[in-house]
Amino acid sequence: MRIAELSRASGVAPATIKYYVREGLLPSGVRTHRNQAEYSDAHVSRLRLIRALVDIGGVSIEAAKELLAALDSGSLSARDALGHVQYALGGRRSQVGEEQREATAEDVAALLDRRGWRIDDDSPARDTLIDVCAALRLLGHGDVVAAMDDYAGASEAIAATDIALVRNEPVLERMTETAIVGTILGDTLLAALRRLAQEHLSSTLLSADDAADRASGEV
Image (cartoon, rainbow, N blue to C red; front, side):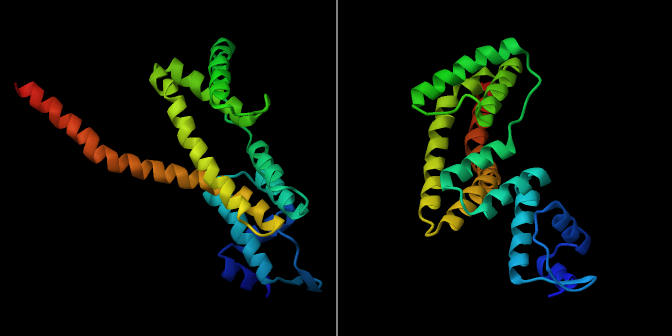
């Protein structure tokens, strides 16, 4: 198929397709003439993967390039692929003071010890957790930080599902893709499910609390 057909099949504009080719995210088509190239269904699938990572997963072009290169290498284990996701995405750094970070770092280290989690000292996710907890404390929401063990328990159950899905894939390439896509789009999936659960529970639990407050005020 020509680039116009590829654009229609994938829903991606020709200019964007050419940009992805220049950036190395999408393989070039097979040259048929000086200014023409042929593309295949594999290009359609690749474009869908790129758009899912960038548009839904919120991954930067640079991070997407690194993740796709890891996928294309065909030599990564599923565990290494998960590591690539963690380090390609990096961490979110908050503007908290070093004193607050040091105090919170001790709390995070204690949590990891309690859970028995083996985490590298330079893990971006570890740094993100430290910064988030430090920011929560500065905002006066230490109660959220105090609930870390509950959040960690739920997260471990989710991670067990993630790993099971990866292990169930029959070939290394699919295991690697599942590790990458499942982690990135899974973050978006979990955020959406969390908000839906909050909406559901707030309609019952918080409404009941409001009704109780009104009733007590009428007495």
